[in-house]
Length: 319
Image 1 (tube, rainbow, N blue to C red):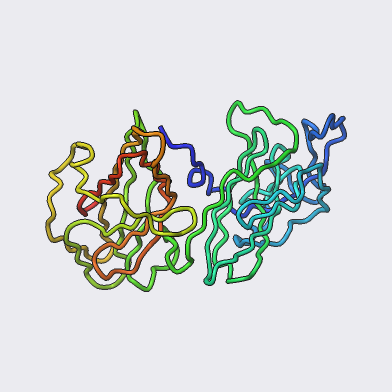
Image 2 (spheres, helix red, strand yellow):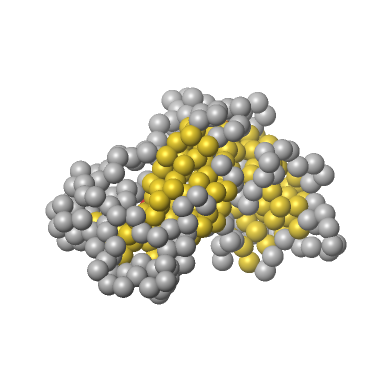
């Protein structure tokens, strides 16, 4: 069972461009027609695809003249502002999906350094997310994302909201794919699991460089709150002191990864609240694979309750 944050599971729909017009049926009170139409110049499902859209935050709009549908223009949160909502969307193959929606938005970065944003939107049955990389200090970038309905979801009106905004320094953004970082290793977190108050998130490392990479023990961790400040007062412990997870013994041993090999660690915590105040909720975790390594900031959405403890496993080879 996954925690409430939905950003990672919908990133496959990143940066899909908008299209479509409002359908000919009655819109009702602020709603979208049940069958919004796509522009005639855009192929429908089953037709020949267009050139794949550019996967950037401000990808060019596809062919056709989209017609804005009623929306909550101006909705803003944490530097993100929704600017337009359209009926229909262009998918990764360049095909117009009339059953989807497209949101256009702006991201403004007030931080003193480049930031990478992950934004999750909701529109009553539709969900979409976008990762905007490298927003410069004091700069604003535009983005566009397709919003699709989940199985069994019923589309409602066109009231779109921002569910979540998360941002990390671009220099520390995780890189599960793409060019190998200058450090020669990729570090990233998976979606994790949550059940009965126990949370487990995997930390993955790949040696994508050209030289062997040596690990010894556990990654170094810093808990970071929503204001990007370090959280004090939480003990980082061997995982067995928080929960018994099974598997191989959690004993630190030297580990050398040849180019292409991978290692796995993980974090574990309990969402136990035993007091009226003092609960720790921190979205971010700064990870160093070993002492002196370049930091990577992941977003495990830590809800530590009042336990004051976070467990971490040793690095071991990932098969």
